[in-house]
Image 1 (cartoon, rainbow over the protein chains, first blue to last red):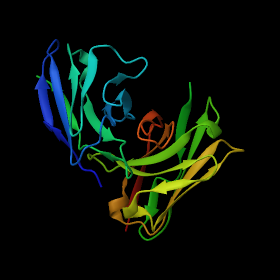
Image 2: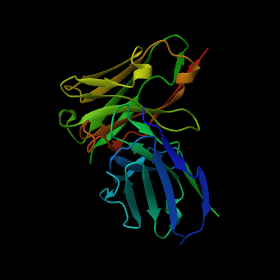
Image 3: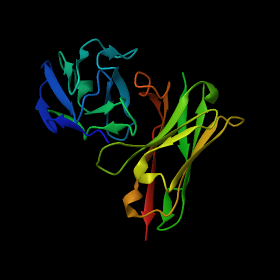
Length: 107
Length: 121
């Protein structure tokens, strides 16, 4: 199985900050990396797919990059509604696996 | 806009079978792939398996001996059965949609809100 490791596990930031979350795969997954946002008690929401494609309806302050084993999700200017937990997910091969999550909290 | 809704018992006894159903509305179940994903309380996400409308399934190896996913196109529903459950199977179970099983398509663009299933001893 491909192991996905996110860093940091938690992060405190302020509204307006630029934030970057990293996801590392245990082997190369090309560009097949997807990002989700999850708020407490809610279902995850797809943000980005195949590393850098923005899902319809997701604000352009979200961006993704990377290939191979190292990927990043960047939020250019944090908004109050962005405080949530973020997960990466590899779709290179089954079994599909997720990172452990990065909790983004208000400073 | 497609909507997914999980339903089933919230409490299952240890060693028994967990059964959940996902009802799809606002779209046909025959056009996409469908998965179950679970999340133990306070923990991360684990993909369980997927099914296509033709009945082809794909399961995570660690659960393959205990899990089955089936589909009822007439009701626009798909279901999860997980047998011989233990406390480790306590989780929120989500159903989700994806466009395919190729690398470029195996991401989940619609999710159900989730159903908490607690396994009791």
